[in-house]
Length: 172
Image (cartoon, rainbow, N blue to C red):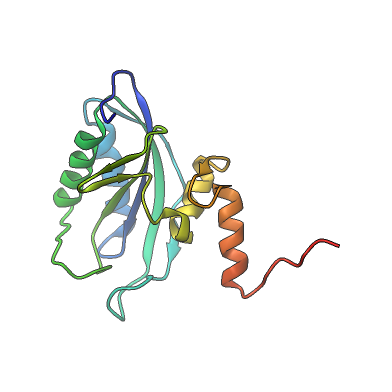
């Protein structure tokens, strides 16, 4: 089911690495909050991260997450996210992980699992991305991630430890 009869809590990841990144993220939050059927409930702090993938030499990203109360169906919310990206100069030119003025990814739409062309929720790669999990941990640290069967905070800790080349020793 992808329609919202009563408000649904949705979580969106935001990122930018071109232009005035903080202004773009703040403007996107305002644009979403001003959209009928959407109310911004909470916004994470911004986190600066190095690019993952994409063309070499691109600038650092500013990343965050926000929680919405939304009465729009999931597909209509996704369309609004894409419209806000376009309004902020986002150009999709087929280069994977290319620099961007604004990127808005729908991470969660309530507890729904949606697999439709162009719309997959929960976001399929969120569990592998520290730059998504870090801000998400500020909004929903105990939210269960179905793919890895851990909470956001547990998964973030696991990936952070792995990135440092450490492994947890067996008990005993």
